[in-house]
Image 1 (cartoon, helix red, strand yellow):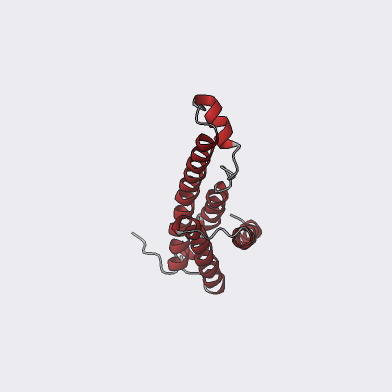
Image 2: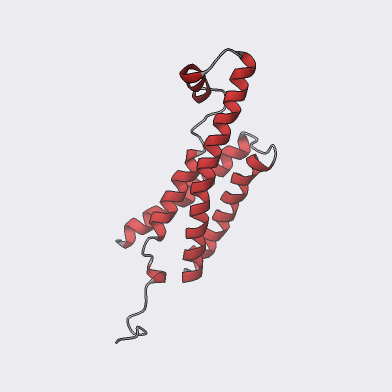
Length: 146
């Protein structure tokens, strides 16, 4: 991957992390474990990304990859939690809802159902950034030849 592309992905990831963290804090996304978890993951990612930017190594790349996989899982779990919360809310308001009608109301509910997909998107950007990262490549002078 060309260096400018990798650098662009790093900047996009850093801006996405910072923007999402600020947005969640402004929305007071702090009610219990499930709302604090993405804030903590993003905070950890910002710190790890800073460490990696200052001293890239195999360890920081692998740690970023692991964290970005957790971001993917977090996004999927978040979508499910937002959807479930919206279903409960809609059933409290209109107990007769079911099937496709309930799904439609839940997806368009008060809690943005697909918003946690941002975590998955950031995870994918991070994984793309770390794909075949130069810090993980063997130095040709130290490579063992058979």
